[in-house]
Image 1 (cartoon, rainbow, N blue to C red):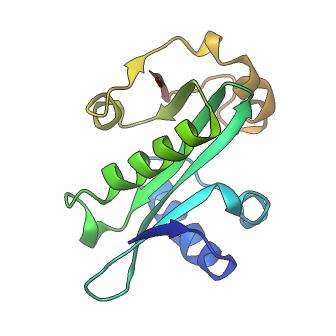
Image 2 (image 1 turned 180 degrees about the vertical axis):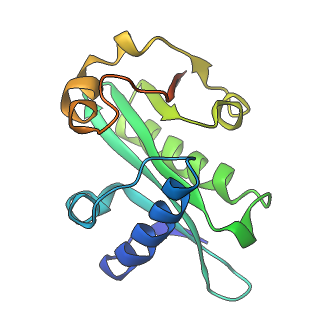
Image 3 (image 1 turned 90 degrees about the vertical axis):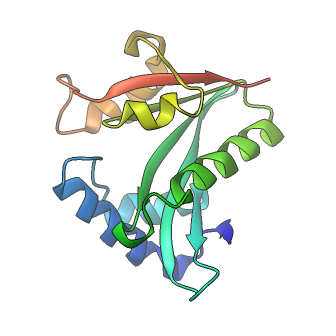
Length: 152
């Protein structure tokens, strides 16, 4: 089951993000950032045992563009379609909101390419760069790949 995140989910989101950040597959986020942006997040709850399986956020950047961010799935739920389902939920919401383009900065580009995302130069993401990336410890030497999906 996928639903919007609730306040009690934030600590679980924080834990999963930091575990994945330690593995080098995504960037960590502070608790403060997560509380500020918790409405961006969807969470996947296992139907079998009601356990938290993963999460993904859709962050609106401008009137026609949004970012898929902080996609992470617990190890025991990987390779079961959880990540794909979470991204699809975010894309569905983007379409409902009238968003025309969705991008991602990622260390796992092949996953997103399998969902139709295509390589894009980071220079086409100016709002992202100046709003969030400038605060990142890796700025200006970002090693994430940028991909974009044009929505119908």
